[in-house]
Image (cartoon, rainbow, N blue to C red; front, side, top):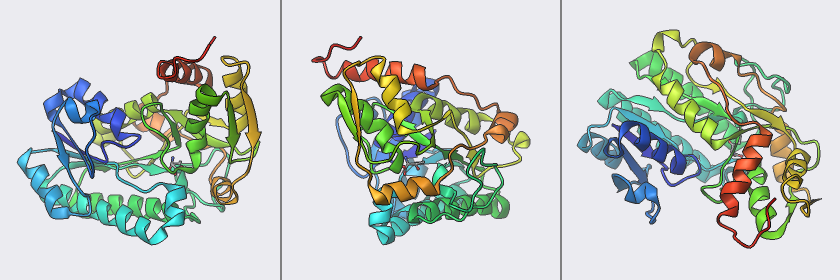
Length: 318
Ligand code: VAH
């Protein structure tokens, strides 16, 4: 059985449904600090859990006899830059709680890292798996610390910890949540609502991105991988595409010819984006556990517009 924290978030809301499809609804216990009426809550076990309460996390894990924790709670990069102290306390406090519960109960463990773990001194193109990690954001400091902590719990206590350095994730299930890469989600919502988008990142700002179905599959594949084949654990570089804002605009225009793109740079988010790589190398993930992607820019745009336009009937989408 799998306990998921942050189950109502961008990754959680899709991961829980996929895990319930694979392993059965009763085998996936969704938790979050609040409740809503989404299928995450109604289609299987749901518990209210504030992840800063390690005791409660332990009790729920024990009561449901879970064997795996997937810890998804985090304040993302832009929010963390506005509230660095809160970000440290929440991101690292909750991670430590989840690792301690995993150690005490002998659980398998997953938490995402991010391209945010890289910094301005990291090689920016085809960023290697093993390289310099000196991020200049609180979020990045949290992600590097998290990677080190997860490797420590593996080496010192034998906890089967595994992680993925996610690029920007694009999905239609939840509204964007305070990430620097979230322009890539907002643009689709605005394209359908207003046929235009004002990008807070300038043209030519390249970052790695991935469609959510590929991210979810990568978590499942990594967690099911043969441990003896893993030379790395926390955390694997994974990516689907290296793109800039104008690439989304031109792809969206193929579906919504009237779409227009404007640019109004947010200096804080621009600085964060520029401190991250343009493109990363996912060779280790492919070689050690068979990482692969199904969605490129064209296929992702097609699916995003199709799925979102069912929510916005007022649009003539070709
Ligand atoms: C963010 N979407 O922008 C997250 C992610 C790679 C970026 O960590 O903060």
